[in-house]
Length: 389
Image (cartoon, rainbow, N blue to C red; front, side):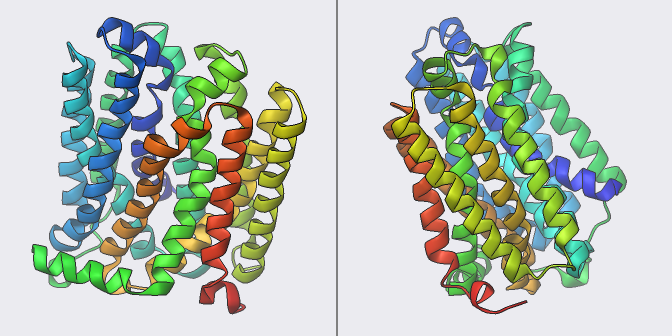
């Protein structure tokens, strides 16, 4: 059990780094004499290097080992977090956020690969459900923690991230075994990495699976990225009241992950997958209808998001395991490809989609429905959807 929680803690680091400082946007802008847009761009400065480096973290772990990769990644992340806390201006904050992003994906990527290294069959699905649950819970809980720490000052938020990364690094070194012995390691070179990615991304089944994973997560994540406007402007909530969104959405994820764990080995993946997409589609459509026909309301605007997360959390372990199993010999690279696609869609959401749709709750609701339709479009064209398992 402790292995599962260490892996989950590693996976949760990246979303914690994205979302813990969201409630502090306006305060950081005032302190650094920057505009809200400039602080918003610190998200992009984090996400772009994160997405780029996820293409390397898995391949690096295939070459030098899982634990060594975690040591380097989290060690750099700790230093970058301290740099963010001490930033005297927005340009310095951008630099250290970019360094955080470049290093922060190591834990998430390697953790996914290690789940499949260590566990098989239904047990792998159960463990992945727990990891995915905490990965999903992190962006929901993080702003609550950030709002609390903001009561001290915004610098403490980044010190918290440094401490979290340091403790996760210690736990990984102490409790996790090295799952890639030297004789099974791949030679690290740009040519080998490119060949590996050519292998996985020319596999249409794998590509469709990872797009579906990213689309499902983005259906919820747009609300996290838009939370300063969605909660602050549309729902008239303060930074310390972000829990009104995040506690219900966390509850939805926990329930979905619980169902995923307890149906593993008992109900076919085929059935769970179809039920999950039916549920997500109904909740996303209900969200659009409510937003278009009803005045802004705390319960009505948040409940569909929380219910959506039940279906999202139910199907994520199935999709993730299926994607990793497509390329067992380069599982680290396959995990990198999965994390890259998830973060690529998150980056597109942060830089393009969210600023375009956060004008009203109905815009965000339509974006959620759009991501569900994208996920459904690609997943229905996979063998996982068509073949009963």
